[in-house]
Length: 45
Length: 306
Ligand code: SF4
Ligand code: SF4
Ligand code: SF4
Image (cartoon, rainbow over all chains, first blue to last red; front, top):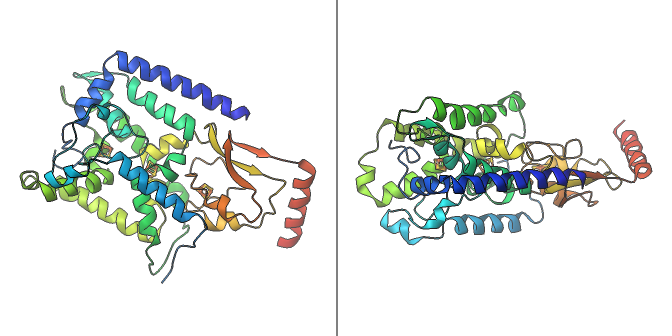
């Protein structure tokens, strides 16, 4: 169980980073990338 | 012909993997039109390696998101969002994601089921080759996109030169349905088809070769295997050291010695194969032990092995 506390702490850090990322516009950046065909992914760019 | 050993419950796990693959890519009608989804849900990463250029994809690929946010507008930037998602997934589930929630892992599992003239469980160099995935993570997914991209365009090096998931779930269906895209196929396209073909062939011989040696996402999640909230647990007092678990592990691990290994994909085959119920999923990685009983079991196993 003790180790699960480290997992919970890491999860909280993850959530804080996500929240900051959303506020700084990175979720929008990911969306922009994800809704266009990624030419690198499909071997065309 | 050699075959993979069957373990009770494999079918259920594959059913979960199939359902997850479908859930990540449920816009099936896009496969016919050769286009990709443009929904807002694509700002959220799914936990597994699933290309956002797959026609049916409704979420973003976490590795694609990471590579594309280490640089923004020609400047280096800290990828708060993608890294946060990766840490959150890793902290809760570790590589359980590889065992249950990754479409490309599922594909490799299915390929390994096909009878082949030999099934290699391990070979010389297997351990050393596993370090490559950490180099892929550090160089191709972080440092190269960060420092070797052009002024305005971020180059996702892993996507561009290696990722077989992008080819299987993105390039193949898109180029089959969309002749305009197919007409652009050049050297890079065929290079990535060759990478995919090698991985497919190797998957007939070795269990999960891409996960073992190359996948940066598995490398990242593996770092959390020791602390992940949902984890594998070993009850030493129930264990008779019979080796049944090690014999069925697709990653060549002995879970009795290292149940929190970074290589463990938490497929639970070992737990299902254990005749004594000594391995199971639980909250936190730990050894549950009645020390006297555990010592007695070890002594007994030692006598048997002499
Ligand atoms: S090519 Fe691979 S890493 Fe890149 S976005 Fe597609 S699936 Fe993700
Ligand atoms: S190692 Fe990578 S490809 Fe394999 S199951 Fe995990 S995330 Fe998926
Ligand atoms: S140790 Fe068990 S759970 Fe981990 S990969 Fe091997 S069989 Fe699967």
